[in-house]
Amino acid sequence: MSYAIIRNANYKMGQLSYVYRHNERKNTNYSNKEIHKNSSIKNYSIKGINTSYQKAFQMIKEKYHLKGQIKKVSNVMCELIITSDKDFFKRIGEEETKRYFKSAYDFVANYNQLGEEFIVSAKVHHDETTPHMHIVFIPVVHTIDKKGKAINKIACSEFWKGRESYRILQDRFYQYVTENGFELERGNTKDNEHIPIEKLKKITNFEVQEMFKESNHLETEVITNDIETLKENYKRVVGKYNTIAKRYTKIKNIVDETMDKAEKVQEENRELRRENSKLEKEIDTLKDFIDKTFECVHLLFDFSLQSLKNIARNFWESMKSK
Image (cartoon, rainbow, N blue to C red):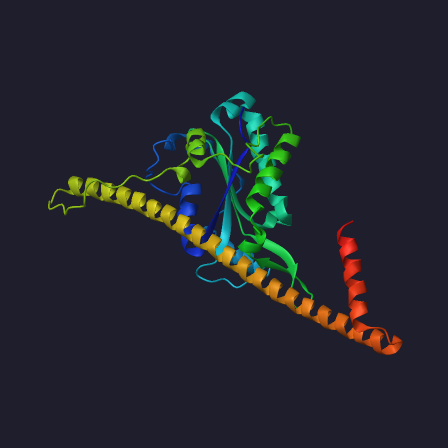
C-alpha cells in the first residue's frame, strides 16, 4: 500500500534563495543524480512565480499589510513537500496524478485558514525518480491586536502551534486525500509514529532529503594558460560550490529547526510557570476568602469556629468519596 506523504520545513530569509533556485530549477548543476534536466520540461506550476521568493515575500507583506516582527532568526516561509511512492503515481496515471497534486494544493490553501493569496509557489517536479510537489507559503495567522482590531500576522510558531501540530497536519492531509478518492495509507497512527526519514528517502529520492557526501580532496590551484582547461576547472569548481552550499543549507536548516524547537519548549515552560504562579495566587485568595467567611459566620451566629471547620472538612471528604 502507498502512503500519503506530506513534510514541512521552515525557512529564514537568508535561506530562501537556495530553496528558490532548487524549486524553480534555476541552478546550472545539481548534486542529485536523480534529477534529469532533460525531463524538466514536464515540470509545471499550480501557482507560478516570476520573481525570487525574497521579493515575493516583500510584495505580499506590503500588499496585505502583514504584521509581525521579522528578525534575522525568524522563520518567514514554510515549505510543504507532498508526494507518495513511484508505484502509486504509475498506478493512477497522469490525469489522476494532476488531480492529486491539485487536491493537495487546495488542502494547503485552506489549512489553518491560510488563504491562497499567501501561497508563494506551488511547483510539481516530474524530472526526478518520483513525482512530488513543493508548496512554499508565508505562515500567516488571522488574529486580533491589543486594540481588538482584526489583523493578518506572520507567525510561524503560531501557525504550527503546539507539539501535536505535525501529527494534526498528517491526519488532516490523509483524511482529505482519501475523501477525494485516493487510496493511500496514513502510516502508524497508533503510536503517533510517522514514516521514518530513511524509508521516506527510499520512497521518494528527491534532493532535499539526500545527504551530501564529504569532499575527498582539497582544492588545489590550477596553473595553466590553456583556456579550455581553465573553463573546465571553472565548471568543476562551480559545481563543487553548489554542492557545498546546499550541504551547508541542509545542515543549517537542521540546526535552525532544532533551535526553534528548543525555543518553543522554553516558552512552553515559561508559560506553565506563569500559569502555576497565577493558580497559587488564586488558591491563596480562596483560602483567605474561606477563612473570612468562617469568621463572619462565627461572629454572626456565635457558632464555634472549629466546629465550622470540621463541618466543612467532613463535607469535603464526603464529596471526594463519591
